[in-house]
Length: 79
Image (cartoon, rainbow, N blue to C red):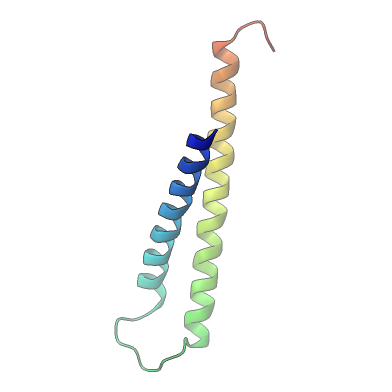
């Protein structure tokens, strides 16, 4: 069980790092004009993060469904 928990933490950290890099690259220009985020940058980041989380949850559900289907197929007669 500990292995699964460690794997989940590693996957979440990887998703967070990818999300941070992608959303920052998409929403924040390389040259800063001011120290704080502009309204447009903040909205862009909010939408970007929301999309990442939505896709991550959707993929997790599909992978869980597929895993359950494979387990059911591997153990015939127990459905």
